[in-house]
Length: 261
Image (cartoon, rainbow, N blue to C red; front, side, top):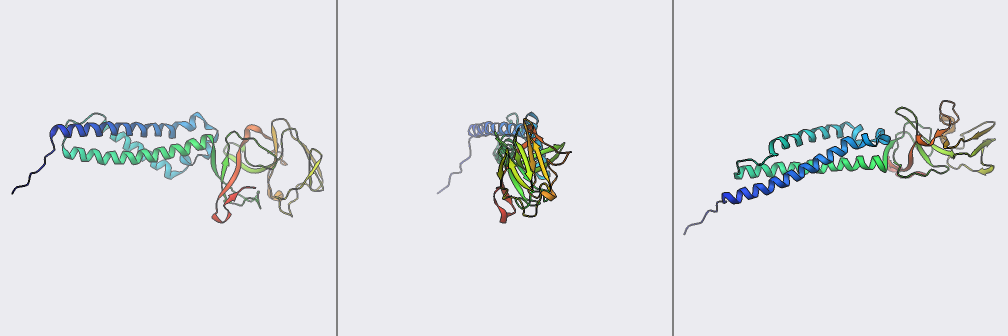
């Protein structure tokens, strides 16, 4: 009794490799599209580029360049259908197809991060203690900046100078009259308690009056004795375009995870 050995037909091999070649080309196109988004989207919409985790983290940068190099290699090698349609060639195609799959997934993941950072929210890190006891040094935050409407006592990111950002709390909105009398806040003549500041924090030790200009905001740190803010002449009132989003959630350290109040 003999056993028959099945040998793949040459025509079947050619059909298989053509099918895999088409799939590989589609995956390459997806990866190239993802790389285009990752690289160029922040240039088209640069407002929140300074908070871009992908472009500002060495690990992501190295990974992106490795993927770019590999995709270029695959394009140069497999842009056209190889003449050799052997079983070994199909196995080689399969290996590269799996690697391109992984590369496409990583690229699209980075593209999602870049897209979200550009239009919806960013990640930020607190440096310093000017917002204690609300926020502490090295707290990591989610900053929401999509279609933002700012209100009294929102905690916001403000741009002071090129590549220099502070995190403060909005006390006065445009055209508000902000008065501190015996360290008591009055907004447009109405007394307002500030439960978020430390008991030992003095905002103004005399009577201070601030009239907020149109399209500007008056911001203070919660640790008033340890904060450079709108009371300082070199900061002053903050223009609307220099507000970069509202801090909404603490994501690290883990024991402090929760909403920013």
